Image (tube, rainbow, N blue to C red; front, side, top):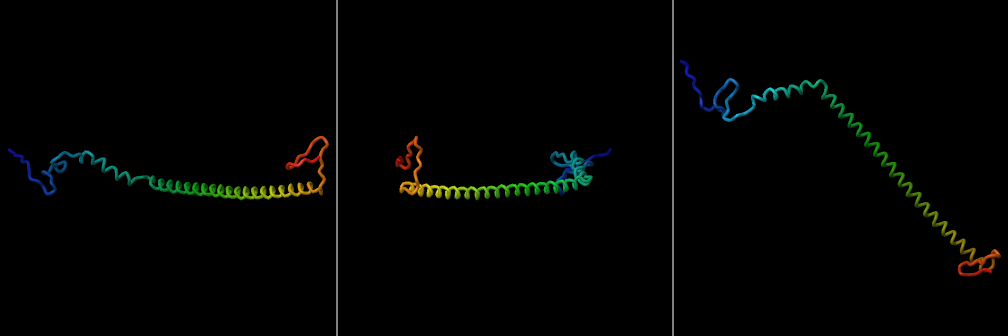
Length: 139
């Protein structure tokens, strides 16, 4: 008769004995069940069939495209800024020109009024109306 004995002595790594499927642990674990899945994952990364190189090239192409888009947008913004600045300069010149034209017209009006009131310029009045200029009536 063969007698089987079970060893309850603990091994140095904390396991309870030796079994054919691996060490026996004091609590349940699923390491043996998931081992084939875990082993297949690193192997798949070694056989990428050029996918890594194509992803690197895709990333470089996207980076180049994004850089070109950035440069284009910077150019557009520079043009808008230059256009706004030139429009400001033109508007300032138009305001300055309008002010000088107003000053010139007011000076001309004062000269004509003074010459007309002093009799140096004739006051031409249509016979059918009465001309009133700065509170003065001209017959």
